Image 1: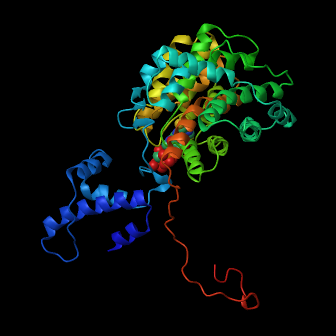
Image 2: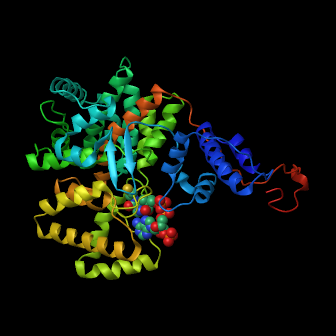
Length: 443
Ligand SMILES: CC(C)(COP(=O)(O)OP(=O)(O)OC[C@H]1O[C@@H](n2cnc3c(N)ncnc32)[C@H](O)[C@@H]1OP(=O)(O)O)[C@@H](O)C(=O)NCCC(=O)NCCS
């Protein structure tokens, strides 16, 4: 009975899931309980049973699956919050697919432009399609001068993610009002790099560099930051970083963007909200902290003592752990391989050694695996991106994914509005203020 009460209160998606789970549970229990009136038999199809099985974790019994799926999960862990065909993560195997394509293949063979096309269209482009799409994106790189004015009036020492949030929000006011939804997506994905570069240049009182159409997205982005056209090797590293960050299913910032889009608010608001969510250190800020940690540790010999002290104080070590991956994040594996090949200076070699030593200890002591942020800071630093720009650059890389999800949400929308598991008091009598002798009456 209690379970049916939950079903009545839950969102349709959750309700369906609970109903299915309960049905299978009831079927299984009715077999063992015979004609016990406390149990109801609900028939479910083989498809539904397979779906339920796919939601089970390794070694879980049917009872445990039912228990887990019908209990409020802290932080919505393992809750299926909607359908999507953009991105698939297998957390147990450590696999990440964009529209069915393995991230390792995309990192090895694709480009930012091609991956963006894939995320938005669901298939890889032909040569002609890719050329037209890349030119369209490149033509939308310049940002309105009003946005430049706003960015250059911000305090030079302000948080770069705060500045990015302002910049993306301002684009929503000054971008071409005649743009279609698709054109708005192209505009945001193209201009967000220009906004980040402008924030950086303003921070150092340097002239803002206008984007060039003849360079790839990755080359032009580095060019606008550093003022120099990057080497092919650096441009390639930036391209791979952008591809690796391009999407990650229902992560916090993408889910934020989808919730905003689901109210039928505009696409700029959705991306502004996503930037706000990404700013949090549990989501976007970890790679900057890894770089800080590496220099704080100082040498590979000091890693053991540092990690031990952190674990003893129950502190989290940045760049490790993940809500979905229970093994090594495939993006971390790709970045680690790349780092092992590009490190050149003594400082880089030492940083990598510190990171890898930390990795070995955390695996042994806590069974904790690296996430994408463990090695990305090292790569960003190698190509000349300062640490205060790591999260904004992450946002630039993630924007094609945010936009793919927002477009997907608009294409089959229902407002996202879950319910709370209310744990407060019920029907408390109202006490007039003059009768409240003590503080907290009726609290
Ligand atoms: C990513 C993260 C937020 C996931 O959080 P989560 O799914 O809520 O996981 P929890 O915080 O509940 O952690 C589960 C357990 O692993 C431990 N753990 C997780 N990540 C850890 C880390 N980085 N260092 C030390 N212990 C960690 C927790 O202390 C907890 O242990 P306990 O059960 O003994 O208390 C978390 O792993 C974290 O804070 N990592 C560091 C920040 C980071 O690298 N973020 C980038 C993510 S891509």
